[in-house]
Length: 324
Image (cartoon, rainbow, N blue to C red; front, side, top):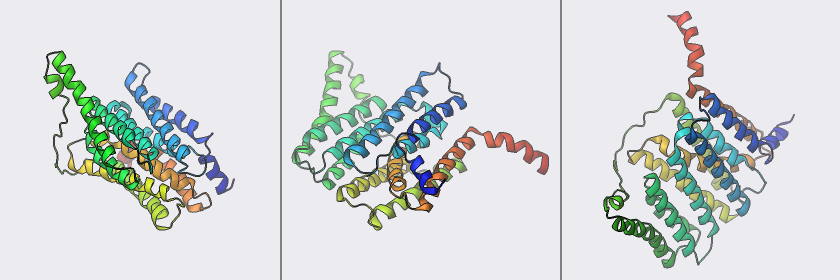
């Protein structure tokens, strides 16, 4: 089998996505998740929904010229490789809300009547911020920047986004007055505890290896998209420029907020999966890229094994017998 045939199989829209879903399912079973636990399976279903939305964005706006589910498959691969994410329901819901907002943003490209889209983005992020107690409201200025890049930002869209925020909190305030419990409203106001709290992130060495590898994928894709002029459409370049901004903002959250890194991993994963999926899918004639794609699948499967401690379980007795 040639490298080009292997690339075709790994990027095939019929083959790769169902296979990754099955692998992600058994990854949870092997990690000890039982059918009596509803939360891990609900997270799994939402993650599949996020993956489908990523494929929808690519198909509807023809960002990836060939029909492939590779970005969706990579996202499920990334999330399945980290068992810590299996029970992260609220961060997964937040990631789903972010993908919806990205879809709305892309839909309003060069739309001078974007106030409805701007209102919906603010409404989704505000509801997500209230339900998940995660400061999604801080991402609204980022979407303003995206609207400026997409030439869809104006005074009407700006005030529409403010109206989206106001609508949610007005409803909460009205309900608290009706129920005679103002604490219901106060407890759901944005609370940014630990802001500007720069700490060194405590991760295992294999987690750092994953971070370094993802950054490497981002750099390779950036060179391919922005430097070598691989993308033919200005719109596609702007979309990826916005995704890189999104990833940068998420990394800033890790550095400047007192949140666990696991709470935003899902959001980082779907952005990197889309970017790297484009990079791998559009370089079918490059053997090195195909080898890198194969290595990516093997790398995250290996990281899953290390995170479960399987390697330590088998190697430590051997190490003790020979060296201790």
